[in-house]
Length: 77
Image 1 (tube, rainbow, N blue to C red):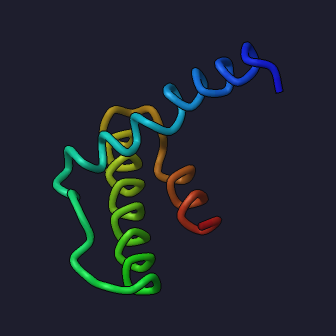
Image 2: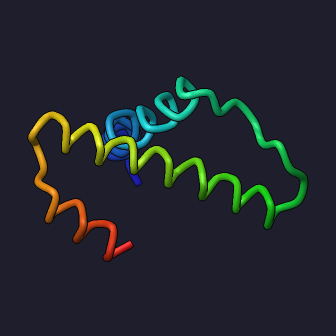
């Protein structure tokens, strides 16, 4: 992998992944409340679910999405 392609991949990461972690931290999640991999994975799944539901509700309220598309997204998950 060349240096330029590595920089391009890292540049995409800053746009796609990093904002989500910042949004989760701003919503109050700063660290795990439980110990152990399985429990921490469960807690993180709950945090991610809350984040996604919040995004869907925001899209509904703004009129970006309709109720049917949100229902379909929930059924697919």
